[in-house]
Figure 1: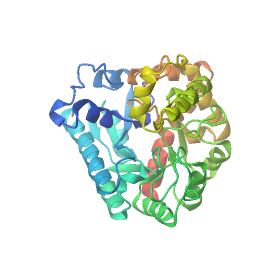
Figure 2 (figure 1 turned 90 degrees about the vertical axis):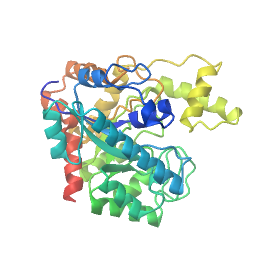
Figure 3 (figure 1 turned 135 degrees about the horizontal axis):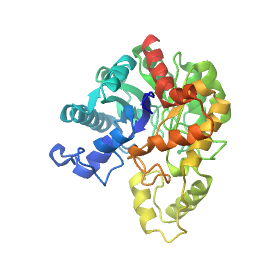
Figure 4 (figure 1 turned 90 degrees about the horizontal axis):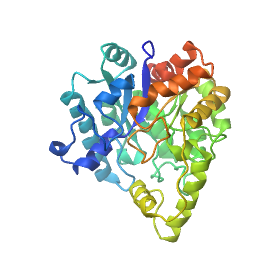
Length: 362
């Protein structure tokens, strides 16, 4: 991987740090010596050969209005403090040129993406301010609908995007913020692709034809990426990449419904799964992720795929991909299946950086 610039589309380390520290910066764990409670730390980032990371400045959908804005600002501040705390390992990046320069210096170029339109508090002024602070993409929804966009895991109310939702997409195009369509309903995907004048990202979504989960992308939408110029970045989340794990998760969902709990609440889901007396969860593996990448390549094309592991945003990971040191194993698996060096360079990061440049050009 020495000649590949690896760009990952989504890592939830900032929120994981918030949870471990209770929001107290002084209580955040040291990332220099290995941190077993996390998927991500500095030694494992180096071992994984990561060149650039979109850190998610995520807050749960239960935060709304001003509370969501303030919590997202706290997450932005957390990423900026991480770069200041570990200057030999991380550096803030605002552009593709920055990412290439920082990666060449041996550090991880640190970009940011806000996960969920609730984060902007229904304000274009807040959207613009986030962009000024370095947020390069906005995922239009998380697990719940917001006031202007439908989520893949909620009951639709907007027919995809409301009129204000279309304004949000247009303003994102104008200010150079990438539209991220992971987590959104298929109707929202189509509506956003109808409106946008710049390429989109799916920062952590797989192929629905391979694993029938609403978080994945249907072939008809993947085909539209060829004309849009966008990129779908395959995740490592087992229930998104393995049909067996998806079926198990459907049973967990039903059990949570019977208990009056919300499966979309990730903390509640993980806590319930730990004590559930249902069948053991099946194991996913590297081959499951490879199957998604090969299908994405077949349908969308090699210029429209990437990697979005979702480390520290999921309780479980496929065998062989248990933390951020494991990216080389995935690229070994792709190479073993005949992927060329040029193809590996595109899926590693050059496709994602092209979208970043296109956002600035648009």
